[in-house]
Image 1 (tube, rainbow, N blue to C red):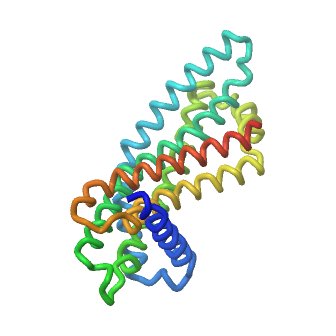
Image 2: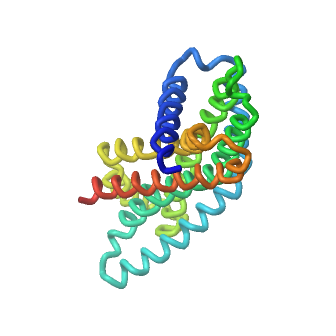
Length: 247
């Protein structure tokens, strides 16, 4: 079994590279592909949007309360918003979104691919990976990007309300701190990290199933195997991001 691991990993990596290249090709986005990607985006993002916004608002309100109280006790009240933006917007929201979408959609895609392999569908003349799973992967990646943007915006709005209430007089101080936190270099690194999260959530579950064993007994393990791969990649990317940002 151990001897087959490099071969499985190679098959998964080849598929991931092919899927990414296809997703970057303009010729991929035919009308059926766009329609299926849009449907997957709705399933992965739109259906959970109310609960997601509520969760981000509650989380943001709790965190800003804790950070502001702690900073005031330490005589560092001026750094409350800075700490909040770095912790919640730059770190927690992207990680939470990637985990949410991977559990909702990525695991299901991995299981579906495992079933297709067992049934021999992937060996036929048609190409279900390109015809159906690739658009769904594009939709999943778009869901990660869109939910991260929405979650970050909600978190920032909640932070303003938590610190200044409904008063407009905190706008200048708020804008100055946010501008300092989200410097161009920080935003570039943040965009790269979120893009990596989106690609990992969309590709890893399917790649793990493509490179996994071809047996009916392995189908129940397809989802956990893909989720483990996603969790490992997210942890490595987060650690690398933190090391670069705060080293």
